[in-house]
Amino acid sequence: MSRSATPNPVASSSSWSAFLKSIASFNGDLSSLTAPPFILSATSLTEFSSYWCEHPPFFAAPAAESDPEKRALLVLKWFLSTLKQQYASRSEKYGNEKKPLNPFLGELFLGKWEDEAGVTELISEQVSHHPPATAYSITNIPTGTHLEGYNAQKATFSRTINVKQIGHAILTVPFPDKTLPAEKYLITLPSLHIEGLIYGAPFVELNSSSFITSSSGYTSKISYSGKGWLSGEKNSVTAVLYHEDNERDVLYNAVGVWTKSFSFYKGPAKNNSSSTLVETYDAASSPGTKLTVAPLEEQHPLESRRAWSKVAAAVAKGDMDAVGLEKGKIEQAQRDMRAKERSEDRVWERIYFTAQDGPDEILTELAPRVGLGVDGDADKTGGLWRFDWEKEAKVKKAGKPSEEEVLAIERDLLGQ
Ligand code: HC3
Image 1 (cartoon, protein in one colour):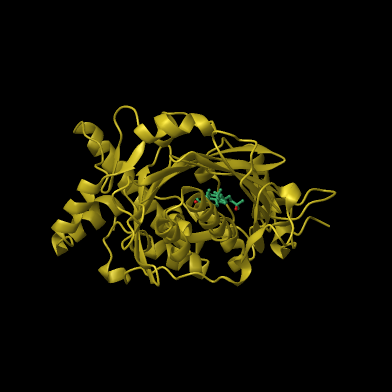
Image 2 (cartoon, rainbow, N blue to C red):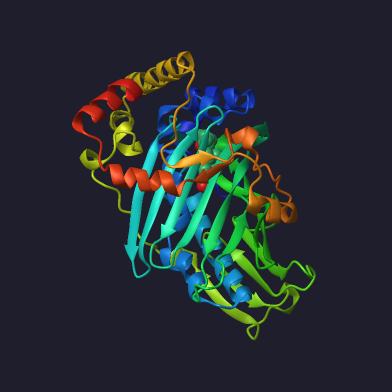
């Protein structure tokens, strides 16, 4: 039997077989896949940005540490702690990975976490529709720790669905002594593939490696592997932390299973023992902080859960005709709006993000270390997106849209 896939009784259904056939010949655009009802999710990809901060105290911790080497280790710990929610939470919750809703241009997902790290705010926005790209900004208010990034996916089919993540994230970590300039960390995103497809129970497995490299010179290389046909454990991870001056001198290493637990050791892995053990983190028993999202009636009409509420209700009832109808209304309104913009020679003004014009300082400094292009793959994500603090200030100042504005947005952008 398969490597940990529990067969789903619906896998033998003709709709699943038709879906598998359509995957084998699809064009790489995941949003174009027509999946059978049981695999459809009512959650939009804009919500996935929240997975970066399941543990706000880990996110904020590096800002309280003044030693750059230990800060880099804390950043690595935070990053590894995000993997479980990023890549396993949906299959743990539903028993399989579902097909998320494909966000429309301008879709927002806003929320905040409140816990011992104080308030941490999330802003996620769909900044491009063709190609689809989501941008996000996460700020821990007390420390000023800030994460921003954008991502798109490029999929290919060879035995299964293989997904290359395009884009990157940038973490800004202020020093406790605020007179020092904040450190920047460039974070690359792991590739993944879908396991369990043949059994109707798809789940994500990570592969190859990703990097976190800092303006202080410290870099973590994180390597992912799964359960092979003969050996290996599902969701395995190893990481090494070194300084750019001497890559071969491993300062710390981490080893474990990102859905279960992993340990950090001082020095290279060959010396791992109880005397070099720094810490073990138990991902399975660390529930994290719940994200708070405003009630639907208080949300902006472009906020994901409000905009997709009728589709979500139809998905929950398994009423595929209503799903098609309600999705169709939004998609048609969006097509009409794009045509109108073209005829008026203008483009949709992103609410919180702006496409950077010209070279990006952080990418210029850090991207060559980790094999990323300095252009931020802008051609594949509709732009090199950066959080625009001025736009955010304007939105805050303007306050909530009036009732007339809400009705106009619902009519013109969502077809309601
Ligand atoms: C590939 C994926 C959509 C993209 C998801 C991303 C890469 C989005 C950014 C997050 O930070 C991390 C993340 C986690 C999971 C990724 C999804 C897994 C499956 C989904 C496909 C579009 C669904 C394919 C359909 C099916 C039925 C095989 O699940």
